[in-house]
Length: 440
Image 1 (cartoon, rainbow, N blue to C red):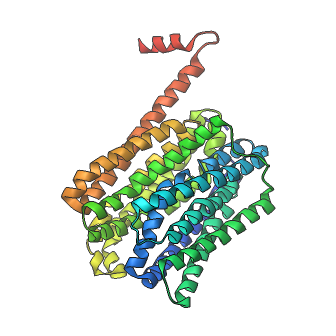
Image 2: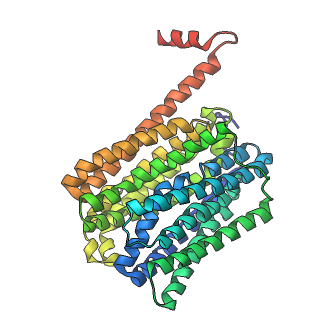
C-alpha cells in the first residue's frame, strides 16, 4: 500500500478495530485494578510506609525507559516489516533487557543511598529495582512480540495480568498482618516475577523460542537508544510537574492536580489503544517513505481527534461530579480538570505525527523534539508553579503539548518535502545541485 491508496482492506480494518478494542478494555481494566491496588496498599502501610515505597518506585521509574534500550521497539519495527526475523529479534530483545536492566538495577542501588532517605530499607529498593527494571520490562517485551504480529489481545492481557497479580498480592499482604514497606516489596517482587514468567512462557509456546543471540548490532542499539530517550523525555514532560509541585508548592496542590491529570489519562485510553494497534502499520508502511507512513495517520487522526474533542467536552461538563466521588478536599480539581480538558486533543495531534516519523525511520528527529519540550517544560514549570501553584503546572502542560504538536508537524512537513525532492531528482543529478536550485 502506498500513500495514495484508499485505505486498508476490510480485514485490515477489522483487525485494527479488534486490536483497539482489546487495548481499550485491557488498559481500562488495568486502571481500575491500579486504583484498588493503591487503596489497599495506602491504607495498609499508612502515609510513612507508602511514602517509602513510592519513593523507591519513583527513583526506579527515572531509569526504567533505559532498562531494555528500546529493544522492544526494534522488535516491533523489524518484525512488522519482515515477520521471518522474529526469532532473531525476540532473542536479542530478551538478552539486551537482562543485561542492561541488571546493570541499571545495580546503579540504582548505589545511588539510592544518596538520593533516598536512610530510613528506606535497602531490601525495599532491591525488590522494586529487580521487579520494575527486569521482570516488568520482560512483560513489556513479550507484549511487543505480539504487537509486532498485530495480535494485541496478548499485548493487552500481559500488563493486565501483572496488575491483577499485584492487586491479589496486595490483598494477601494486607490479610497476613505485620505490614511493613520492606515486606510489601517482597510481595511486589514475587507477583511481578510470576507475571513475567507466565508472559514469557506463553510467548515462547505460541510464537516460538528466541534465537540464541546476544544483543543487536551497534547501529541498531543506537536507534534503540533513541527510543529509550524518547520515552524518558515523554515521562519528564508528562510527570515531572507533579514532583515539582510537591517540591515548589504544597502536597494539597499536588493532589488536586494529580487527580485531574489522572482523569485526562483515563479519557485518553481509547486513543492510546488505537495508537498501539496501529503502531506496526506505521513501520510497515514507513519502509516505503514518510508519505506512506503519513497515510496511516491521515486515516486515523480525524476519528481520534473527534473522540478527543468529545471527551474533552465531557470532562469539562462532568468535572463538578469529581468532589462527590473522591471527596470535598478535591473541590479545586474541578477547575484543574477544566483547564486540562484540551489535553486529549493536543496529545492526539502530536502522537500521530510522532508515530509517523518513527515508522518512516526518523525516530532521532522525534526524540530531539521531545527532549526540547521536556527541557522547556522543566524551565517553564519553575516560575509558573512558584507563582501560581497547580494552575501554573496546568498552563505549562497545555503549552508543552501544544509546542510538541507544532514541532513534530513542522518536522514532518520538512521531511516530506525533503523526500519529495529526492524522488524528483533525475538519475545522475547530484542532490546538492537540486537543493541549491530549490534554495534559489
